[in-house]
Image (cartoon, rainbow, N blue to C red):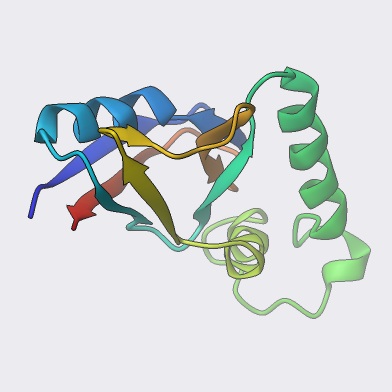
Length: 140
């Protein structure tokens, strides 16, 4: 069963597309059919399948989650206890809990069966840059 780990460098909060890297992994595996499991090895970021045509979608999603779960310095977040790693850390864990850390994508004809406007994204929830590891596992 082919498996690899890719590293994605983030520049702060936002969505980082890695559809090409995932498709290249599937193509290089030589498999025509299967299931690609994508798993992020961190607790303060997550994964999304989302529109990749209009960059406004990425912007609006990031802004929505920032409004939904503001930093721990926001008065509405006074209840947060975990603040040792900064005001964005616990909110990042909450955002990751609301989204997903693993996604399964069918593969047929040696290609990901994503829709026309769908792409794979790492959703970084921390404000500062990070290096994130994403596991790609193709079974079938």
